[in-house]
Length: 196
Image (cartoon, rainbow, N blue to C red; front, side):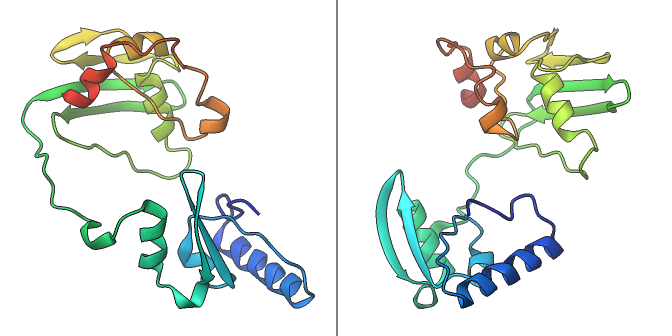
């Protein structure tokens, strides 16, 4: 089973775990792949860690702490799991959105993204988070609003134009959409996204 709970509700996950335990009682072996280690502690007997396509270790799950498993997964101790922030947001606005809208989908949405800042969008399923990001990237059409990049108004009508402006997009469904907007050669302007 590969990440079987990723799209299940809590009640569905409880039901799945009950079925897994029943199967185990009858002698069925189950290979369970997951990054959700808190779930695995309820159903897993042994854990095998792979990193970068290489075998790292196999142990009884009960003999390791979650932190020890994660350390093996990432290849370093977790002493510095939450390092002090080195980047400090400034007043320098890199990307500004004003009154972005798409009829029946979202809007109006306005925000400023500053140099050194990580801006997150939160909301329930269907609230328009993904659609706003796709529209900024040019994957979906905007019905209105303005986008300003480094103080200059831009009109982004396609992912290719967004990439030329140094805007990257990581889709929710990377298997389905991840290669749709791949460029033959990465534009040099893309590096500005990370340098800024």
